[in-house]
Length: 454
Image (cartoon, rainbow, N blue to C red; front, side, top):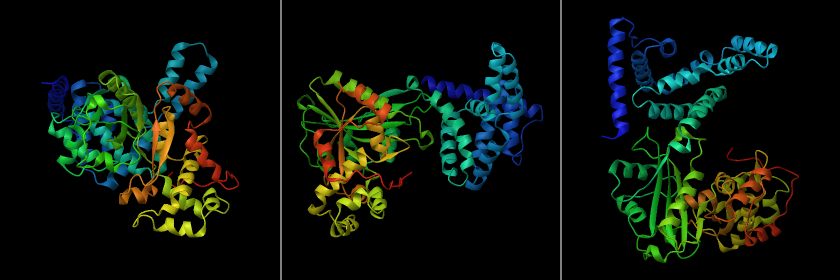
């Protein structure tokens, strides 16, 4: 039995004992009692067994709620379980009067913490509590559009998850054909970049000598990956995705490969949005591959550009935009038809130039690139190496980015330098061939293009 299974069984036993205690004290909550009152009971209790039982009852009750009832529950968390403002004011005044009093500073720190955070900590004591809370946050994220005030609640979840899912707790595993079927099934379901069509497709990605798949796991979610990356071992930097995914392609002996290609990175848990794992995973995979295959010299991605088409369509309607400055009327008309049709060759050079402009010049939130994949890789210290025309000719690829994909190069000697420059000023490291594409795109800032995917 794994240590995690033993711990969950132990918690389950404690919860059962706690339930008996609650029954004997005639304190068991009826099914009609509001979840907010259950939360108050959980926060006010001191007994470990009864607390575990209450936490389990609360999470079980939550799971039965309708979407509207879950929204109401989150609003209750916002209204009833924030910080006590009167207590905060008194603690702050006390610190102002005695700024060197360490106990008073500790008291102020305790007062400013929302009660929700302690509530979530206690809920996590229930058997399966971590998984249930990750699922709960997924529901909460879905409610933010209806009620932006709930972002305050979401910040509490994110604050706690940042500690619970710290890199130090994560375990990297290579996924292969001997991995338990329950994990393989989830890999198929979670793949978010290039759909895995069936078990044969999965086997081609994990059970051949020139393919690898690595995932991060957390001890509280034993059989459920947090994030995974798919790797192709090749001789050259790839220009398109079909040869990598082709069913009848010629295999390459791992010892003959000189390039490791990260061609798909999938975040598996929507409830962990905003908790960064990918940068750690890529760096650890690089170290693993270098140790096992010292012949590998190049580490590169073949990445989508998910915001490109939305950006071009938004910019097309803005006078004096870079898109309008490089596309003639007939080429703009051709762009509109890309999706149902293959992109015509006439669009190749202008669209590559627009893509370079989009990735290197267009910013969101100050100095950060508009494109989310670019933010991730450039923030990790990668270099924008190449823009590939018609690299993903699938229908989804054309609808997302006109089929364009890019390579981000992880040059091990430059990663830290690139990362520091990007973090400080937003400077984008790019190969000279990509930078030259910018010469044909007017760099006008007369009108800002709104972020179409914000």
